[in-house]
Length: 220
Image 1 (cartoon, rainbow, N blue to C red):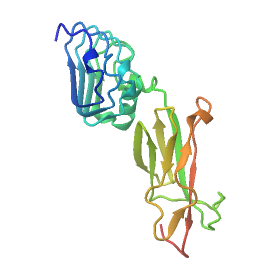
Image 2 (image 1 turned 90 degrees about the vertical axis):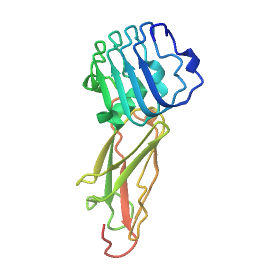
Image 3 (image 1 turned 180 degrees about the vertical axis):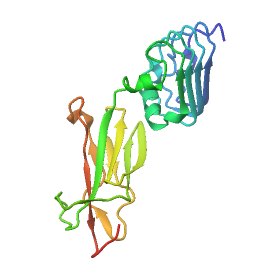
Image 4 (image 1 turned 90 degrees about the horizontal axis):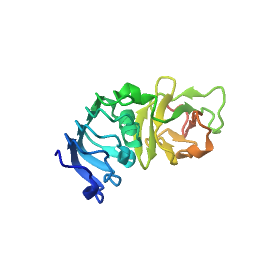
């Protein structure tokens, strides 16, 4: 729409089935979408020759489907939380290209998106005293859940019992092993609450889960 200059009429929307913002020659920003949290299937921000500001996507929590941000030649800052979150969670469903310097592709965003590295280890505590000791072994067949208001992920540990997340927010988040307890094992302390405010910039959060046996000779 060559006459569309703002999206203020959409201010009250929190959820959309899909979003097309395409070829709007007078549109400078996405202001009006500040309350948009969920997009159900697709989002296309393409060919807006005057677009410079997409900070309204700061509060975008969830997008199910394909996200394209392309051919907006004046757009140089696209490392806003909503897009950074999607870059981490669903990178293969995100296309960013042919925008201004600083927003030419996903690789350029990686260094701009501020994330908190979280490295989780899951170990077995054979003596069941819930104290980390040198005899602790990797618990390989486990899945760690990271949960926060704007980010939720499930990831399996590797052969060393370790898994890494990139947390995109500054809110308190929870780490848990939702598949436990099981028949022969339980978690010494599940549902760990992590507050990023307790860590210095650049720190890596390194929590450890210990699994203790509830029967003799348990298999895992």
